[in-house]
Amino acid sequence: MSDRVIIFDTTLRDGEQSPGATMDLSEKIRIARQLEMLGVDVIEAGFPAASEGDFEAVKAIAQSVENAQVAGLARANFKDIDRAWEAVKHARHPRIHTFIATSPIHMEYKLRKTPDEVVELAVAAVKRAASYTPNVEFSAEDASRSDRDFLVRIVTAAIDAGASTINIPDTVGFAQPDEFGALIRYIIENVPNSDKAVFSVHCHDDLGLAVANSLSAVKNGARQAELCLSGIGERAGNASLEEFVMALKLRPEYYGVECSIVTEQIYPSCHLLSLIIGRPIPANKAIIGSNAFAHESGIHQDGMLKNRNTYEIMTPQAVGRKSTDIVIGKHSGRNAVRTRLEELGYSLDTDQVNAVFAAMKELADKKARIHDEDLEALVFSEVYRMRIPDRFRLSNICVQTTMGSTMPTTAAVVMQDHDEEVRLAGFGVGPIDAAFNVISQICGTSAELEKFSVNAITGGTDAQGEVSVHLRDGKYSATGRGSDLDIIVASAKAYVDALNRLEHKEKDVISYKQNPVD
Ligand code: KIV
Ligand code: ZN
Image (tube, rainbow, N blue to C red):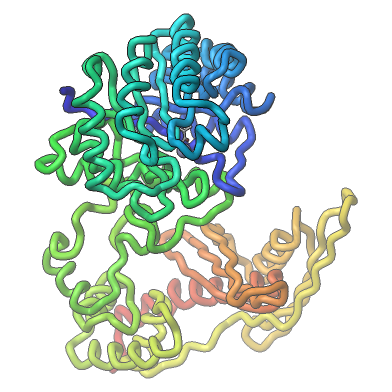
């Protein structure tokens, strides 16, 4: 048996069935290109008979993908199969994937067919597909709730009819890992022509077991897994590609198989998907969530600083992420705070670190996350005993935008620069752009906006918006924050806050670092 697992990505087909994850043609092509960079073996591009849009998307992907196989899904009828072939035939490596349900409940209530009729339809469908290409996959839908010996019968017939891949789906996420692994082993051992096909699995996550079931199947002889980026898919989703792949990569001694995935492309792929479907990656999502490489507990932070293998089983870089995040918060220890202060350029003695540490703990009771700027402010208040007044203050802002007109948006801003009041009005391509243009002119800055993000602090349409703005001016950068019921006012506040922090860094911080005051 081969020691290579074929990675079949179905983000563009089953993944797209995830409520709210619809993608347009150009977005699907972007994902398909990224999947190629990720190194997947097969891209299931869609279900051509489902709609004209799906057909066009599968065809366009087939035309633009170079190395990966491109599969089109088809029910077990000639019309679907012909349509799937019309779409995938443009690919360098086309595949037709045909399926029919095999569980008693699906056969009786959904298909209204007897088991004999289902076998007949499956065989006819596979033969029709095989008349177009030798690359035919047959799926026994709801296999995990099907009779084992009926599965053996239909799979044997499908292979005889020309199927080169046999897929055993856990369509409703009902299987348990040991049981599912045993089912795969049973089918492979009892299908007389099983050596003529690759056995595949396709697991749904209704009980959160999709990855565990897929891995158990690999342990028992499956050599293709059907997966989705970030685990999106019908209902609770499909097995997540990143989790499945990293388990194989991190535990070769356990699984003894390889796969073609370029792991450094995992995060970029999931991130692209998240931007396209407009669904943020949950913070606690394995491998790709923002917390996956963040350490907050003092004991963990201390261990990490001594040897990262204490609390990390892979590096963030291995999955295409920037770096480990030592989160400073109420669980952080002294060592983590000292290290972060050193990274920020402060070399403080033990008493000074202790003072900042104690103040940080107090602040952390009020604020979930302590940012670098907060720590720096504590250095000034606790060590240098100075409060640096902000140079710029926003007094008023008024933004006007006219819908459907070619008139640019206008912003009028009143600010204090030290004690002097300054008023200015100007234009922009939208309200935020107009506000930032005017503020930057008042403050005479050429700082570049590197990041801008908006979060709702509370729910509902009356939610407070919290805006975070990251600016860079040469080698200095600073993050400013602002909150308000009005997003534009929150943005303006955050922008002014960032400018003040830059101002402190560029002037005062440097001189304090050179001549610290005790
Ligand atoms: O979940 C399922 O059974 C499917 C098949 C079409 C493979 O998506
Ligand atoms: Zn599915």
